[in-house]
Length: 315
Image (spheres, rainbow, N blue to C red):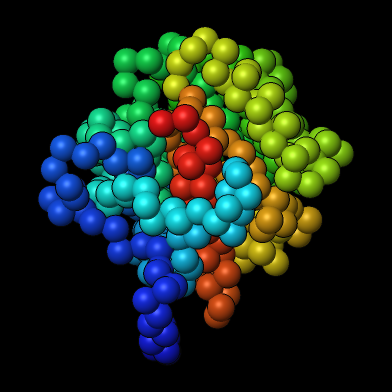
C-alpha cells in the first residue's frame, strides 16, 4: 500500500533528506554523521533488519526538526545543525563486512561530533563501537539500553558485549540499563556479575526513573562509570528494551518493557554528554512492523533525540 503524499508547508520543514558527504559544505565539520549498518545474517531469530536503515530515513520525513522548548525555554530549530548522511555499509556482516563498517564509522566520525549508526540487528554494535573507539579501546566505555545482556558465546546479535570485552573493553566500564526478567538466562546473569558489569535492571530503572529527570540521573551515573578512564563512550540502543506494544518490530521485545517516552528521554539524556561520540540503533525489523510503522517511527525519533542532545552540548 502506497502512503499518501506528505503535505507541504514552507513554515513546517521536515527532518531527514540530509546531504551526503559529496554534497555537504566543503570543510564544514558536521554535528552528526548518519550511517546505515544493516547487519542481519547472524541473527538468532529470523529478521529483515537489513531493510531498516532505509525505512528509518523515510520515517524521519514525517517529523519536524524542532524542539518546542530548548534549554532557555525558546523553540529550537535542529535543522540548523549540520547532518551528513554517509549512506549504508555494503554487506556489513562477517569479518570483511565488519572491517568495512569499522572503517566507515571512523571516516564518518572524523568529520563529525558524533555518529548514529542505523541497524540492522545488534551485531552492528561490535564494528560501530570499535570503529568509533579506534585506538582508545583500553579507555573506552559502553552503555546499553537493552533488555538482554548480549553475552552469548559465538558470533551473533546476542554476543556483541562479550565480543567487545574480548576485544579489550574493560567490563568495569560497561553499564547495561533495562535488563529484564524472563529475557535472559541465569548463566548469563552470572557471567555479567563475574565480569563486573554494572547492571541496572528494568525494575531498578523504574524505581528510580521518576520522569525524565530521574531517568537523566540514571544515565549520568552510567556515563560516569563508562567514561571513568576518560575515553569515548559508545551508546547501544536496542529498541527491544521497549514494551512489545511499542516495538512490535523487535523480535525479542516483551510485554512490560519501556514506554516510548522513556526510551526517548534516555537517549536524549545520553546524547547531551560529550563523552558519547557514537550511537547505534538496533534490533528493529522494518519488514515486521505494525501497519502504522510505530517501531520504525520510534527509531527515527531516537535519531532526532540525539540531535536534541547535541544542542545541549558545548560546541
